[in-house]
Image (cartoon, rainbow, N blue to C red; front, side):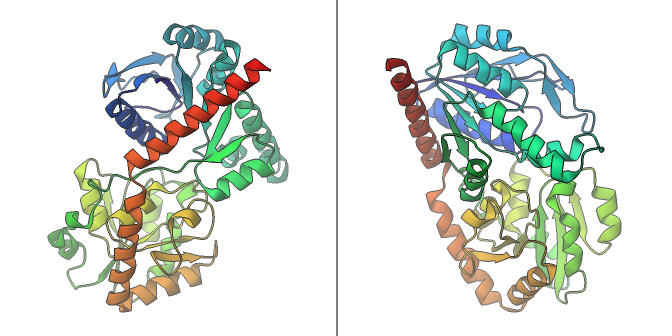
Length: 381
């Protein structure tokens, strides 16, 4: 199969969208598919190819609020030319917004089946950056309207979780299916736990309560301050972002490691005793899967993606969004009950065996085939 992947984010930027695209490309190429990647250009340098798939870049500008984030400026006509030359069997549009919108319009003009992946809660982010003259009550419907129009040309939209699919259907998106994300169970495994690192974090034998991710407002990392007076714990925060200094002041006893890359990510994750992710805007929650694969029990809000990942009281705990007393109580329970921690962690690790990237990309290819059939049926009418 010939697959064109058009992504709003790519290397050198590393985030959830980029990582998902990289894993999909690797597996598609491994399985013998031909792949073309179209991505925004970046002053930091974009590779000419990845995993044997050529990469074509289009002009981009930096996002005012986050200069490192690139926004592509390619027109629909440009995408018609790029996609027409490659002639894919299907177009995979990752987290469409600006570049993805042009790509979806191009696929409709060309009659190419398209699968659009809703990966980021853009309506919330767009609402946050719309003119302040608009109240949240007006901004959110406007933002949902924008995203509905972006996705409208897609043959099929894929939501990363049950909760996100329900939200998309509620807001009028058509033809929505569910496709989660895979986890690398070789890279993320309990064997990567480093007891020396754990002792360095917690020389007094404390239970290490960890967070790993971007230190940005939507992650609600400041909620971890509810654990600051919990006896027998050490909070470890792995990652970087615009709120690091503010969070360091708010959590003076926490260990801030900064951002990690490569094998260090898994080593740090596996060395946690408990993983807490307080973010309430997760359409999926990839780091929750990675913690589970490392046999680390997960605690997260009962909202969005975590509902599909965490089996409450079996692989971790879910708490009502915003109920920090409940979150603290769940952490406290695991801190004093090491056998329960091990039990939940072991069950979480086993649950991830069904979520490997080969299996998930196999499911994705079936969605590609569905989009191809839908397009062929529409053309035959």
